[in-house]
Length: 231
Ligand code: SIN
Ligand code: MN
Image (tube, rainbow, N blue to C red; front, side, top):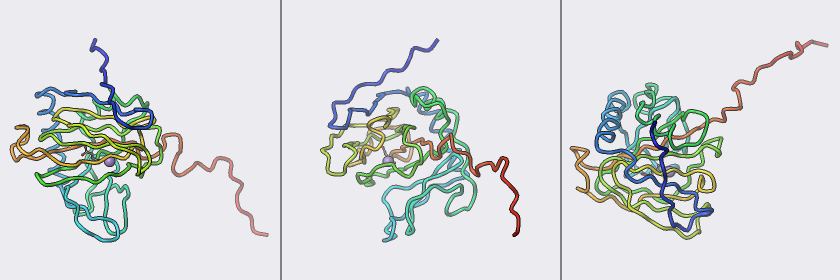
Protein backbone atom coordinates (compact mmCIF):
# COMPACT_ATOMS: atom_id res chain seq x y z
CA UNK A 1 0.00 0.00 0.00
CA UNK A 2 1.19 3.49 -0.83
CA UNK A 3 2.17 5.51 2.26
CA UNK A 4 -0.06 8.53 2.92
CA UNK A 5 1.27 11.72 1.36
CA UNK A 6 2.52 14.31 3.83
CA UNK A 7 2.51 18.03 3.32
CA UNK A 8 5.09 20.44 4.66
CA UNK A 9 3.68 23.14 6.93
CA UNK A 10 4.42 26.57 5.58
CA UNK A 11 5.38 29.36 7.92
CA UNK A 12 3.45 31.93 5.99
CA UNK A 13 1.43 34.86 7.30
CA UNK A 14 -1.81 33.23 6.11
CA UNK A 15 -5.07 32.88 8.04
CA UNK A 16 -4.90 29.58 9.92
CA UNK A 17 -1.74 28.68 7.98
CA UNK A 18 -3.93 26.42 5.81
CA UNK A 19 -1.68 26.32 2.75
CA UNK A 20 -0.51 22.75 2.21
CA UNK A 21 2.74 22.28 0.29
CA UNK A 22 3.92 18.95 -1.14
CA UNK A 23 7.44 19.50 -2.50
CA UNK A 24 8.48 17.05 -5.27
CA UNK A 25 5.07 15.35 -5.18
CA UNK A 26 5.82 13.99 -8.68
CA UNK A 27 9.22 12.58 -9.56
CA UNK A 28 10.69 13.18 -13.00
CA UNK A 29 8.83 10.24 -14.57
CA UNK A 30 5.56 11.37 -13.02
CA UNK A 31 6.15 14.90 -14.33
CA UNK A 32 6.85 13.57 -17.84
CA UNK A 33 3.64 11.51 -17.76
CA UNK A 34 1.56 14.50 -16.61
CA UNK A 35 3.20 16.70 -19.25
CA UNK A 36 2.48 14.19 -22.05
CA UNK A 37 -1.19 14.12 -20.99
CA UNK A 38 -1.33 17.94 -20.96
CA UNK A 39 0.20 18.09 -24.42
CA UNK A 40 -2.70 15.88 -25.59
CA UNK A 41 -5.09 18.40 -24.08
CA UNK A 42 -3.37 21.19 -26.07
CA UNK A 43 -4.04 19.26 -29.30
CA UNK A 44 -7.79 19.94 -28.91
CA UNK A 45 -7.69 22.96 -26.58
CA UNK A 46 -4.71 25.11 -27.65
CA UNK A 47 -3.25 27.83 -25.42
CA UNK A 48 -4.78 31.23 -26.06
CA UNK A 49 -4.15 34.71 -24.66
CA UNK A 50 -6.83 35.74 -22.15
CA UNK A 51 -7.79 39.40 -21.73
CA UNK A 52 -8.36 41.46 -18.58
CA UNK A 53 -11.95 42.35 -17.66
CA UNK A 54 -13.07 45.83 -18.88
CA UNK A 55 -9.72 46.99 -20.36
CA UNK A 56 -9.31 43.95 -22.62
CA UNK A 57 -5.54 44.17 -21.99
CA UNK A 58 -3.84 40.85 -22.83
CA UNK A 59 -2.54 38.86 -19.85
CA UNK A 60 1.10 37.78 -19.88
CA UNK A 61 0.11 34.19 -19.09
CA UNK A 62 -1.41 32.02 -21.84
CA UNK A 63 -4.21 29.66 -20.83
CA UNK A 64 -6.25 26.62 -21.69
CA UNK A 65 -8.48 24.28 -19.67
CA UNK A 66 -9.64 20.73 -19.33
CA UNK A 67 -12.70 19.38 -17.53
CA UNK A 68 -16.41 19.94 -18.07
CA UNK A 69 -15.90 23.64 -17.30
CA UNK A 70 -13.01 25.99 -17.98
CA UNK A 71 -12.13 29.35 -16.42
CA UNK A 72 -11.90 32.19 -18.89
CA UNK A 73 -11.36 35.96 -18.79
CA UNK A 74 -12.21 38.65 -21.31
CA UNK A 75 -13.66 42.19 -21.45
CA UNK A 76 -16.94 40.99 -19.92
CA UNK A 77 -15.29 39.44 -16.87
CA UNK A 78 -14.18 36.18 -15.29
CA UNK A 79 -16.35 33.10 -15.60
CA UNK A 80 -16.54 29.37 -16.26
CA UNK A 81 -17.56 28.17 -19.74
CA UNK A 82 -17.95 24.70 -21.21
CA UNK A 83 -16.16 25.54 -24.49
CA UNK A 84 -12.85 27.05 -25.64
CA UNK A 85 -13.35 30.78 -26.39
CA UNK A 86 -11.50 30.60 -29.73
CA UNK A 87 -12.25 27.14 -31.16
CA UNK A 88 -15.76 26.80 -29.68
CA UNK A 89 -14.98 23.14 -28.89
CA UNK A 90 -15.79 21.49 -25.56
CA UNK A 91 -12.80 21.28 -23.20
CA UNK A 92 -11.22 17.80 -23.13
CA UNK A 93 -11.49 15.72 -19.94
CA UNK A 94 -9.06 16.21 -17.05
CA UNK A 95 -6.23 13.68 -17.58
CA UNK A 96 -5.84 10.71 -15.26
CA UNK A 97 -2.48 11.83 -13.86
CA UNK A 98 -4.12 14.99 -12.50
CA UNK A 99 -7.22 13.28 -11.13
CA UNK A 100 -4.86 10.94 -9.24
CA UNK A 101 -3.27 13.96 -7.52
CA UNK A 102 -6.67 15.41 -6.59
CA UNK A 103 -7.69 12.05 -5.13
CA UNK A 104 -4.59 11.96 -2.94
CA UNK A 105 -4.57 15.50 -1.56
CA UNK A 106 -7.95 17.23 -1.97
CA UNK A 107 -9.64 15.67 1.09
CA UNK A 108 -12.93 16.35 -0.70
CA UNK A 109 -15.38 13.61 -1.75
CA UNK A 110 -16.25 14.85 -5.26
CA UNK A 111 -14.32 15.10 -8.51
CA UNK A 112 -12.91 18.39 -9.80
CA UNK A 113 -14.86 19.91 -12.70
CA UNK A 114 -12.28 22.34 -14.03
CA UNK A 115 -8.54 22.41 -14.50
CA UNK A 116 -7.09 25.75 -15.54
CA UNK A 117 -3.80 25.42 -17.42
CA UNK A 118 -1.50 28.44 -17.23
CA UNK A 119 1.61 28.70 -19.38
CA UNK A 120 4.26 31.19 -18.24
CA UNK A 121 7.00 32.27 -20.64
CA UNK A 122 10.18 33.81 -19.20
CA UNK A 123 8.59 37.22 -18.53
CA UNK A 124 5.09 36.16 -17.49
CA UNK A 125 3.69 36.73 -14.01
CA UNK A 126 0.34 36.77 -12.24
CA UNK A 127 -0.86 39.47 -9.85
CA UNK A 128 -2.24 38.71 -6.39
CA UNK A 129 -5.81 37.45 -6.65
CA UNK A 130 -8.32 35.12 -5.01
CA UNK A 131 -9.94 32.11 -6.72
CA UNK A 132 -13.57 32.94 -6.00
CA UNK A 133 -15.60 32.21 -9.11
CA UNK A 134 -16.61 28.80 -7.73
CA UNK A 135 -19.88 28.06 -5.91
CA UNK A 136 -18.43 25.81 -3.21
CA UNK A 137 -15.46 27.02 -1.16
CA UNK A 138 -15.46 23.80 0.87
CA UNK A 139 -13.60 22.25 -2.08
CA UNK A 140 -9.91 23.16 -2.26
CA UNK A 141 -7.90 24.40 -5.23
CA UNK A 142 -5.14 21.89 -6.03
CA UNK A 143 -2.15 23.11 -8.03
CA UNK A 144 0.65 21.22 -9.84
CA UNK A 145 3.69 22.99 -11.28
CA UNK A 146 5.71 21.66 -14.23
CA UNK A 147 8.82 23.08 -15.89
CA UNK A 148 10.67 26.21 -14.79
CA UNK A 149 10.49 27.23 -11.14
CA UNK A 150 8.68 30.36 -10.00
CA UNK A 151 8.40 32.59 -6.96
CA UNK A 152 4.89 31.99 -5.60
CA UNK A 153 3.38 34.59 -3.26
CA UNK A 154 0.55 33.96 -0.82
CA UNK A 155 -1.21 36.10 1.75
CA UNK A 156 -4.42 36.07 3.77
CA UNK A 157 -8.02 36.33 2.69
CA UNK A 158 -7.95 40.15 2.69
CA UNK A 159 -6.04 42.04 0.00
CA UNK A 160 -4.12 44.13 2.53
CA UNK A 161 -2.92 41.13 4.59
CA UNK A 162 0.83 40.56 4.72
CA UNK A 163 2.23 38.01 2.28
CA UNK A 164 5.10 35.55 2.07
CA UNK A 165 6.73 33.88 -0.91
CA UNK A 166 8.45 30.60 -1.66
CA UNK A 167 9.87 28.87 -4.70
CA UNK A 168 7.71 26.35 -6.54
CA UNK A 169 9.64 23.75 -8.54
CA UNK A 170 8.59 21.25 -11.18
CA UNK A 171 6.57 18.44 -9.58
CA UNK A 172 5.50 20.49 -6.53
CA UNK A 173 1.86 20.47 -5.44
CA UNK A 174 0.12 23.21 -3.43
CA UNK A 175 -3.35 22.96 -1.91
CA UNK A 176 -5.35 26.06 -1.00
CA UNK A 177 -8.12 24.70 1.17
CA UNK A 178 -9.84 25.23 4.49
CA UNK A 179 -8.81 28.56 6.04
CA UNK A 180 -6.55 29.22 3.06
CA UNK A 181 -9.17 28.56 0.35
CA UNK A 182 -9.59 32.27 -0.29
CA UNK A 183 -5.97 33.25 0.30
CA UNK A 184 -4.65 35.89 -2.09
CA UNK A 185 -1.91 34.38 -4.25
CA UNK A 186 0.10 35.13 -7.36
CA UNK A 187 3.34 34.52 -9.22
CA UNK A 188 6.04 37.21 -8.88
CA UNK A 189 8.40 35.77 -11.46
CA UNK A 190 9.59 32.69 -13.33
CA UNK A 191 13.23 31.47 -13.23
CA UNK A 192 14.03 30.77 -16.90
CA UNK A 193 16.25 27.74 -17.53
CA UNK A 194 15.68 26.26 -14.06
CA UNK A 195 14.12 23.05 -15.45
CA UNK A 196 14.71 20.88 -18.51
CA UNK A 197 11.24 19.29 -18.43
CA UNK A 198 9.73 21.53 -21.12
CA UNK A 199 11.85 21.48 -24.29
CA UNK A 200 10.59 24.96 -25.16
CA UNK A 201 11.25 26.30 -21.62
CA UNK A 202 8.68 28.06 -19.46
CA UNK A 203 6.37 26.94 -16.69
CA UNK A 204 3.02 25.16 -16.76
CA UNK A 205 0.73 25.41 -13.76
CA UNK A 206 -2.43 23.36 -13.45
CA UNK A 207 -5.14 24.22 -10.93
CA UNK A 208 -8.02 21.84 -10.36
CA UNK A 209 -11.26 23.21 -8.98
CA UNK A 210 -14.77 22.12 -8.08
CA UNK A 211 -17.04 24.76 -9.64
CA UNK A 212 -20.63 23.79 -8.78
CA UNK A 213 -22.03 22.60 -5.46
CA UNK A 214 -22.47 18.84 -5.64
CA UNK A 215 -25.58 18.97 -3.43
CA UNK A 216 -27.47 21.31 -5.77
CA UNK A 217 -29.09 19.75 -8.83
CA UNK A 218 -29.58 21.86 -11.92
CA UNK A 219 -32.38 22.19 -12.84
CA UNK A 220 -34.11 21.35 -9.57
CA UNK A 221 -36.61 18.48 -10.02
CA UNK A 222 -40.23 19.61 -9.92
CA UNK A 223 -41.60 16.58 -8.01
CA UNK A 224 -45.30 16.83 -7.33
CA UNK A 225 -45.63 20.35 -8.68
CA UNK A 226 -49.32 21.17 -9.04
CA UNK A 227 -50.37 21.81 -12.65
CA UNK A 228 -51.06 25.44 -13.39
CA UNK A 229 -54.76 26.10 -13.74
CA UNK A 230 -56.42 29.03 -15.39
CA UNK A 231 -59.07 30.85 -13.36
C1 SIN B 1 -3.34 30.58 -10.55
O1 SIN B 1 -3.53 31.15 -9.49
O2 SIN B 1 -4.22 30.42 -11.41
C2 SIN B 1 -1.97 30.04 -10.90
C3 SIN B 1 -1.01 29.95 -9.78
C4 SIN B 1 0.32 29.45 -10.25
O3 SIN B 1 0.68 29.67 -11.41
O4 SIN B 1 1.06 28.84 -9.45
MN1 MN C 1 -5.46 31.52 -8.65
